[in-house]
Structure formats: C-alpha cells, structure tokens
Image (cartoon, rainbow, N blue to C red; front, side, top):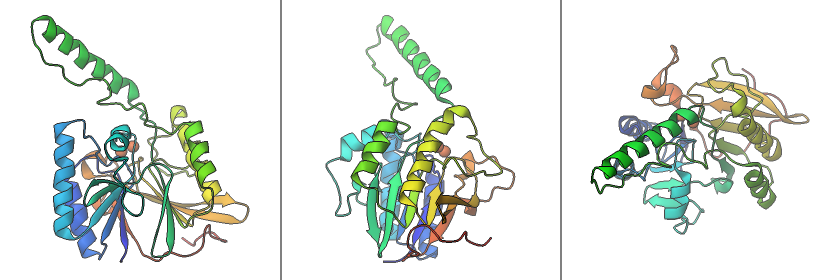
Length: 286
Ligand SMILES: [Fe+2]
Ligand SMILES: [Fe+2]
C-alpha cells in the first residue's frame, strides 16, 4: 500500500500540484494528503479545471490525492456536491483520483489510524468581503445599464464555514473521541510557538484552541498541519506524560515569503505503518 506524501497548502497552484505528484512517484508514495487550502474552488470555472487537471495527472502518476479543507476551500460546496458520493473509507469522491476528508473524518491505512479536522480563520476576511461587495456593486451598475449577467459574488472569496464552530467540534468529538496515531488539520494547535507565525493574532486563537482541544482529546503521536506557510517541528504536551510531535508544512512557492523557504519544505513522507501507539511517552529527540 506504501507511504503517504503529506503536503502543505497548494492554493490551486497547478504547477506545484504537478511537482508534488512527481515527488510522490519518486518517493514511492501512492497517496498524497494535502492539509488544506488545497484549491477547492469549484464555484469558479478555473477551480473545476484545476480539479480535472490534478485528477488526470494523479491517474497518470498512479497516485490518489486526498485533502482536507483550509479556510480558502469552499467546503460547503464539496459537501453539497459529493456528500452522497463516498468511497469505502468514507472519503468524498470529488474525482476518481481526488478525494476529500470532511471534518472529523477518521480512517485507517496499514493499521495506522488517522483523523482530519479542516478549517481555520482568514485574517484577510475583511478584504475578501469588501471585494465581494465591490463586485456586486459593479454587477448592479451593469444591470442598471441593461446587462443580464448575474455573476456570482457573495460566497466566492470568503466562505462563512471557514472555521469550525464550538458546537461543530463538540458534536464531532461526541461521535468519536478515541485516540489516533496521526492527526491532520489545516490550522495549528494553540500551544506551538513557531519562529515565524503569520497567525499570531487574537482572532485566530479560538480555532487554534479548538485544534489544541482535538490534540488533547485524540493524543496523536504526530500531527501535520498547514496554514502558516512555514516549515517547523515542535513537540507539545497532549496530556499528562504524553507528547505529540507537530509538523507544520510550508506552502506552494507563490504563497511562501519566508526567506529560508525551499519547495521541499512543503512536503514530507509519512512512512506506514506508523504505529507508535497514540501520544508519545517521551518527547522525540531533536
Ligand atoms: Fe494558505
Ligand atoms: Fe490557510
């Protein structure tokens, strides 16, 4: 069954997606898992094209691409379109080789247990909403002059479902709260303190607290996330005497502004089986 290439934010960057698929082949990974801000923009023609291109390239590479939702993925549309099309492991089949892990989804590969929790807060929410309303005003002006076009505006740049709510999280945890080996999220847990942190802002803390709650409930041995666009590793407490190794992954080159960025900071190989049990008894060295 092979290993999994875990990948940071792609933001719909087709060139980067093709690079990632080549790396997956080179590294002997028949699966790629992207930890959000994948580029789920199927409300736009370009977003549907991106899904088609990734699907075709994945098929050629013999790879299946999985992803969870970031703040810049329209997850409500994924659930609407593909909620009834699930594979045998419960993933939503967006394309044959492109599958979505909805929030709270759990599965097992090679005896290793996984859970995915998407969502995060957009710090540029105000800018996105302002742009949507500017487009709506422009469309209204055109209509006043006789245009019959009704372009999509609301819900095209900012998605109200972007972060988990407390109720959503509690209901997901009420369904399943047992430990997992590997946790995949878009947002960071509150406790990590990376050197470079674009999201160290009060409006981001509630969702980071929710992810921290997930870590402490599921006590994974390892936790991968994106959203910061920065590669770091840190070990944090997941409970009394239990530790989780957190791996933050960088993004595609277009979205990476840190001077020390290298493209291979945006992926890492997870070898399977990864059965260290749940949280580690001791912090990993290094
Ligand atoms: Fe991102
Ligand atoms: Fe993000």
